[in-house]
Amino acid sequence: MRSILPAARPEPAPRAPLALVARSVQEMVDDLKSVRRQYLEALPVAGAVLDYVDGAVSIDCCNAAYAALETGGDMFGLYPENPPAPLLDRCGFIDRIAEFMASDDAMRELEWSDGGPVVGRHYVIRLARVPAIDSGEPRCLLTLLDKTAELQAEKSLRLEMFNDSLTGLPNRAGFSEALEQAGAAGDNHFAVLIVDLMRFSRINESIGSLAGDELLITVARRLMSALRTGDVIARTGGDEFGLLIRLVDGPGDALHIAQRINAIFAQPCRLSDLEIRIEPAIGCALSEPDCDGEALVRRAQFAIKRAKISGKVEVYQPVAFNQARRRFSLETALRRAIEGDRLRLAFQPLIDLSSGRIAGYEALARWTDGDRGEVSPSDFIPVAEESGLIVPLGRWALDTAARTLASWDKAVGEPLPIHVAVNISAIQIARDDVAGAVSAALADHGLAGKRLMLELTESAIIADPDRATRVMESLKALNTPLAMDDFGTGYSNLAYLQRLPIDMLKIDRSFITGMLADKDKVAIVRAILSLAHALGISTTAEGIESIQLAQTLSALGCTRGQGYYYGVGMPADEALAYWRSRDA
Ligand code: C2E
Ligand code: MG
Ligand code: MG
Image 1 (tube, protein in one colour):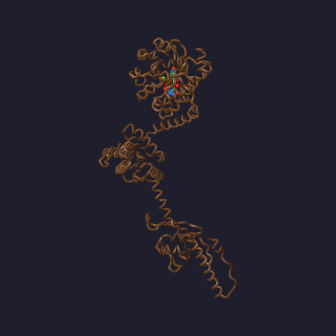
Image 2 (cartoon, rainbow, N blue to C red):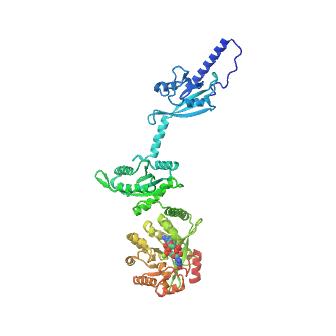
Image 3 (cartoon, rainbow, N blue to C red):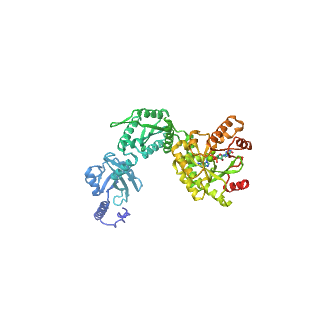
């Protein structure tokens, strides 16, 4: 702009007759006007040059685009019949234009919408100072940028981004925005309810996805009817709705609405000739000063897990959440430890009570974490089971146990007369091909089947008796002995002891510890021993910590013993040295 218009006031004209001077000034003004017009016409947008004379804004000249805008729609009233002319203030900006022209600012931007938010047009009005040369009065360039298309595109994009197309409700992102707004308004008196439709995927499968969509719309409508003005409802997931509830009379408001929702769904939903009962699981989290919207949603979702079990509306409890978070971080660390091959096996001796010789070792997983130190298997095995990590962990344990046993054989120069017992979890039985993994471990390390004993718990059988039976039979086909671990603590269903190919009963430590001073425990141990004897099954007593216990159990006819009295779980080389020192 400045490059086109002369940058400075021209040199004063040399002395000349007054008429001549007046004409040449007029010519110069005309020249400048023509330059301004040319400049304006070159602009790709509607533009006008405004003058500011005696505190009033008027138009000096404008381009055709500006004129078309004005004459076409008479929108601004800024177009003068015979410029210069005073501006009409139809857009309500004259004061601000005047204020700008009286100021020293080089530029200013104003936004203006003409004709309402939906059908109207939206402009950015830009004011830029133009050097005042001819009149000496302040002058500015006004341009109008039509942003209507841009804003409409943005609006429809936002609509798509923040709304669910099926129900028309805000979606997850829209809900987050509503929560953010509530938080930003400093409103700490609200609650988030998450409503999950139980078994919805099953319903969807059986009625078809079109009917499923219709059902979701019905559900959305019903949920809306439970809300008050000011509450927000969103579809936050496929079969999950999020509700932002303002707490006018305290937390009771949220529970009251949750109850209303339950009551609303007591009536089945009708879809043509189908009657479908919707069971909502409702989790609730109350806003707290340091808790943002996303955290509230997570808390309410966490509460839902309990709601699904209890069948009641559950309010988030921080203790349970922290436990779950700890568990999750333990799971992440365990996954990394498995991937990084940082678990170890410890080998605890299994002693033949009549001869005192080592019958074998039980392989026990050990994990030392960088941050947590030594983590007990009673802590990480349940996490591994819950997360499915027990499958790779179990395969690793089988392979490592077989590799260690083969290395001992190699070190001694012949197969040792001992076996290694490996624990197999119920989850492995359910999810993995345990027989295939055992067979591979034996083959990879050139071991006979009898060298690996497998310890299963009663839960593995109870969960899926048919599958457990098939797995145990395949294992028997590999000639691997099977032990029932922790016997007496679970269901102790004696029927399967007779039916299944079990070689060894391991009597749980809880019966052995303190047994000498407890007649009931002695009676239980005696009963288990005689039952096992009758069925031709060997026995191992877990948790022998004293010679007296070892002697008593031997006298009662127990086959084997395991416990700190004989040795704790030790690294592979120590276990081999222990065997050499006792039995070689
Ligand atoms: P478990 O299979 O019953 O293993 C015996 C547990 O008793 C071991 O605990 C062992 O250290 C402990 N123990 C042995 N003798 C004594 C004693 O005299 N006194 C006392 N107080 N304790 C004794 P650990 O190593 O903590 O293992 C706990 C459980 O974790 C195991 O119980 C087993 O169920 C599971 N586990 C360990 N490693 C594995 C594995 O590789 N795979 C699977 N699935 N489970 C494993
Ligand atoms: Mg065991
Ligand atoms: Mg045990």
